[in-house]
Image 1 (spheres, rainbow over the protein chains, first blue to last red):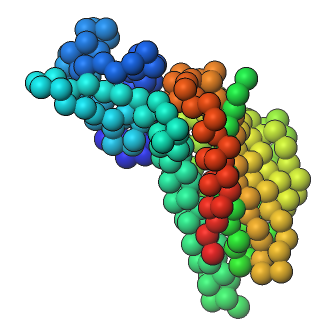
Image 2: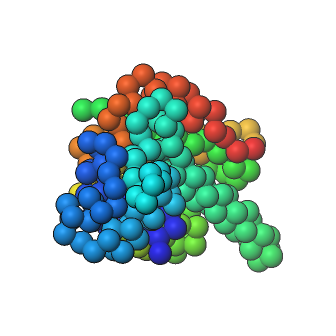
Length: 109
Length: 133
């Protein structure tokens, strides 16, 4: 299961789902019909997109609708946040390794 | 074509030569990010093994030794550019990272930029303030 934005965007079906949601919110069953996929498969892809913050879920009675999280001022940074989060983590790792190399170097001395 | 960027600055208590090695030496690169046959040579094409995102094709665009390293990132998927700038600083190195070209031309980017309009300057302003100690 992808845990970051790149994992979420890796899958062509998920990219097509994002594209389909540009026109407005859709239910799981409508999306499944559009993509000629089983509902469980579509639900799984939507869950991945939801977990990284690219879509949000809305319950309407027995149905779940999915919205792009890019549909207004308040949502703007929601799109960038997964990238920002990802890169912040990577830069943390880079900084840690730079520190570690310092220690390795001083041990070698 | 509208493109936008993620920018993150980091002040690292290490000389630029040290930071540079982390960016351009495959063995070190794999330890903080992912494996890939990265090389600081303009025109060099390489792949970064991005786990579930798959191997992503990159091409080196600019190299200024211990100052700047830029390459295309994820051709055909994000079609974006990663730029690493290293500025000497009294406390070490100011590392300025930019992921640019997140744009309307990619399926993932197209949907995201719809309807965002006037939101961008504020977002970029906020991102520019993101800087770790």
